[in-house]
Amino acid sequence: MDQASLLRSFELEFRVAKNPALFESLLHRIFTLSSEIISITTFEEGLCLYANDAFFEVVGFRREDIIGRTFDLWANPSDRKELVLMLKERGTVRNFESDFLDEAGNIHHALLNLQCVEILGVQCILTVARDITKDRVQMKESLHIELLDDLRQALKSLPNLVFRLEKDENGMLVYTLSEGKIAEAMGLTTEAIYGRTVPELFPPEIYAVAEPHIRRALNGEHTEFEIEVGGVVLHKLMSPYYENDRIKGVVGAAIDITEKRKLETLLQRSEMSSVLGQLAAGAAHEIRNPLTAIKGFVQLAGELFDRSGNAKGREYIDMAMAELSRVNGLVTEMLWLRKPKEIRYEPVSVPKLLQEMVPLLHVEANIKSIQVLLHMEDVPDIMAKSDLLKQVVLNLCKNGIEAMNEGGSLHLSSWSAGGKVFVGIRDTGPGIPAELQGQLFTPFLTTKPTGNGLGLFICKQIVQDMNGDIQIESSPQGTAATLSFPAAPA
Ligand SMILES: Nc1ncnc2c1ncn2[C@@H]1O[C@H](COP(=O)(O)OP(=O)(O)O)[C@@H](O)[C@H]1O
Ligand SMILES: [Mg+2]
Image 1 (cartoon, helix red, strand yellow):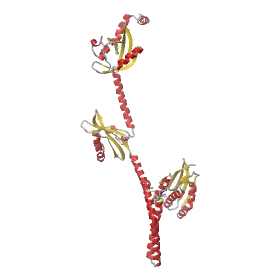
Image 2 (cartoon, helix red, strand yellow; image 1 turned 45 degrees about the horizontal axis):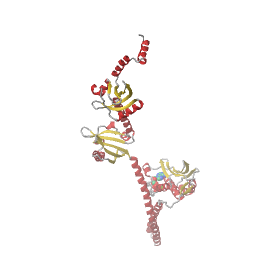
Image 3 (cartoon, helix red, strand yellow; image 1 turned 30 degrees about the vertical axis):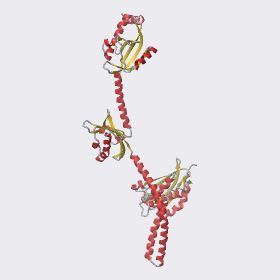
Image 4 (cartoon, protein in one colour; image 1 turned 90 degrees about the vertical axis):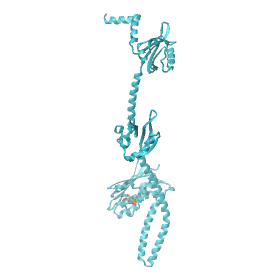
């Protein structure tokens, strides 16, 4: 028979005539060969009429335990009820996932396809099931690996440190995990330190701090502490690490609080500055009155010496007066630190204020043949108190003039940008020594024989009180102080 007529005959016998002999011989083979689990049970009683080879291979049991009997392999009995309902409604169910138990009691996960069929006048269910337990395990495994990978990747990109210490077979506590940006920066990644102990990796003083916390975590406590490792301040958390309800080690995390600590110190310092300022101003106020009296009495004593022609006495008096006027100067400056509670800020024109100051500056500048130059842009007003602002500018100009020895120039400027008004005071002096630059605004810091080191400190207090800011940049070519203030609302 040629191929075309073979195909035609097959179609005719199989599909059209449904030749029972052909069907039987093929179907039986299909059932036998199939790796799908096939069974036929009666709808009502669940009596098993047929089960194929795959059924017995997967499910177990002997033929006589299954055929002609009702059996219940459902891991979740509610599945059967649900399926019966669905079959009653639709006559067929596709891809129903369910768990069943084999003879040994193992759970299998299966994908079920069911169909109602009438066999010899009795309603039956034809079930074709596929055991997908293995697929599922494989899927779980690959998911597990993927998840682990993901997790490690996530841990690696954390800005923190995450670590785990576990007891090894000798009972030694060793690192089994250490990830995160901190670990990376410190060269303490899992790869680098796996299997090593804390005292192996860190100097004794660090181990001494950590050890009591490790012990507490091993005792089931959660603990927190701060520790400095290689210039980095870490806030660490440690907790017990459980496996099967038993403590197997310690898990922990850490964040870098170096910057936070620095900021806190700065804040404390600036708070201290303002307290110090208040104290200084208070003291200055108290000193001023007796000082005035002392000056008066010293002057009187001087006159007495003059009258009696006591030259030595006059000399002493002059020295005392010079010292007194120094104290007076200091006290006057300290009074600028008074918290300007009662001060009301009002719109001030910076260019106008600078212009007004020029004659004052010329006096001192001329003596040292220093030029005073103005560069002024039209700028919005700022909210300030002009007396106080003049004091600030004056202090900065004085520093500039004092720094310049053989001529030079002092530049005063104003400009505005981004809603802010800037005031610049720049000199062409030798600059500020590098070691001073970090602490310029500290009170009583001075390099001048008759300086008091309050100038910049006071400037900062005043400017900050006006919501402004002060920056000082310096190089061997000169120093530039820049004040910035928010523009007053129009
Ligand atoms: N324009 C400047 N050029 C060089 N050094 C400066 C300048 N401004 C400030 N300094 C340095 O900062 C120190 C502190 O200044 P300041 O607080 O005004 O106190 P004082 O002027 O009484 O010394 C000065 O002693 C000086 O060493
Ligand atoms: Mg000064």
